[in-house]
Image (tube, rainbow, N blue to C red; front, side, top):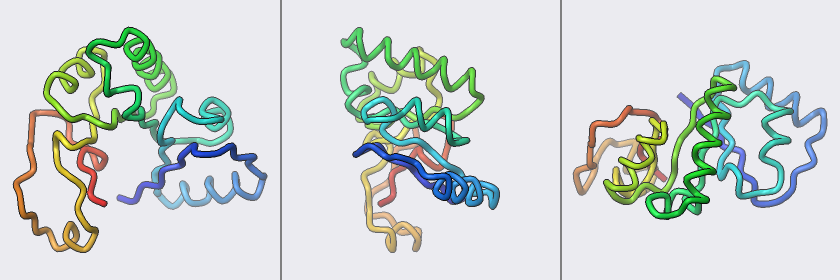
Length: 149
């Protein structure tokens, strides 16, 4: 399954052609995810204008989730938004079991981060070889669960 992630590093003024292109790509079965949700310029605008399959909560929000009440509130809001829109929610930057467990309690079920596996070159991942074994905690598997590039 192919995923395209739209990131928010800079403000994007979507043209009708660009919106149509994204819709066409999605019609071919390519999944569209909004990356770095909440950290950029136009998260809500993108959600209103583009049919996305999921949102990815940035590491800047998840890194202090256990002790950060503001991050907790933001994740709760993202859980609610994703449920109301019937789209996936992926938490990025998971580096330890405590963070994973806390996010699970908040309602997040898909994860990505070093806790599962370190990034590796695409050619290595495609060949299926790994120098070290990936962690496989009992979490719902998703293509976003393991960063591969």
